Length: 81
Image (cartoon, rainbow, N blue to C red):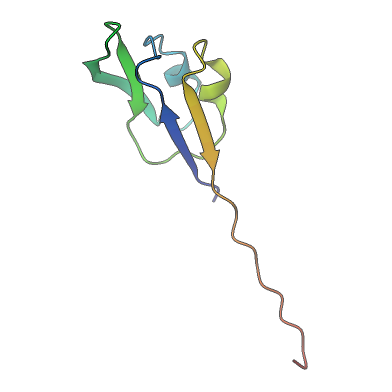
């Protein structure tokens, strides 16, 4: 399974919730905290991100970065070594 990691710039996020609606895994939620601009910001609520990048694509503030973990490569063993 592909894993992803989401980072959200909480000072830039305006809490529009577009990323929350776009996440098929329901990984994001609004924080109970308020940033310096007075907005509740998005945060990772569940550690089940698949790295689909839907949240980053819809973010109007470009406050979200998604990192995907590389798939583990299968080692190939040849006969006779």
